[in-house]
Length: 298
Image (tube, rainbow, N blue to C red; front, side, top):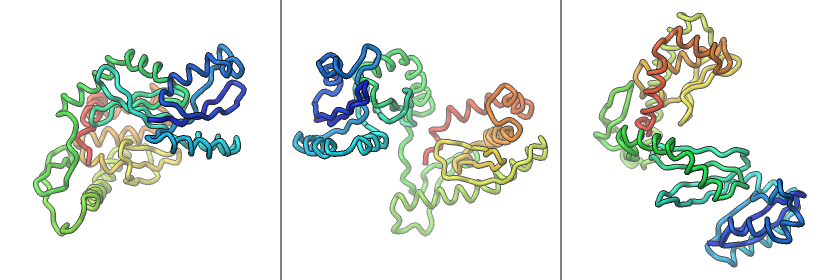
């Protein structure tokens, strides 16, 4: 595998090359004449772009093209890129996504796999060190997924398949879907969920709005896959269609959470006190949602 890369030096010079060992090449640049000329002890060269090629000639061809670009075009290129790679540590594979972000974030997906979101210049050595330091947290999150039934099997949208609705499991019954592919069946399922979500969630919002006096502007059901709800500065509240799969007690928690953002625009102690005043057991409801999110994958 060949890596086409762009390094940004301390004097902002951009250096392009091709290598089979990216981490080693970065270290070489930092200790070579190039490193001595363009770096300082506090500001080593940084990886700002990387792309994999199976064929060396293809990598060199792309390298030549990039070298002909202006500095502005190179900057635009790497700022728009997300670099994907897979690494292994003690037999465990994890995915690394490099982008223009400034910090590193670890994410455990619904299938218990680990993804590392890292800046372009973060070395594999540093990422491995961070994963080692966060091993207890990673294991805890992965064990939680296994405790809840393990990675969720992708839905096939066939008769008898189980789906959640208002916290209860229901068997799917298919009508008028002959000839539809998997994507089309999923779209119809989501359309049904959204149709059920709007009246039920609107009912709960109206109930708690009247109870608390927190007046909202509007309600909408969105296509959001990972964000349960949001509240705009103007009071427009949005909820994910997935929320209708949760028990009514959990739906109420998300509703109250978003309504509480009308008087409090942040997550300060005052905000959580307002939530607790309406739902004293909100922490248990919040915990249930966090631990069972994988069950709502459609």
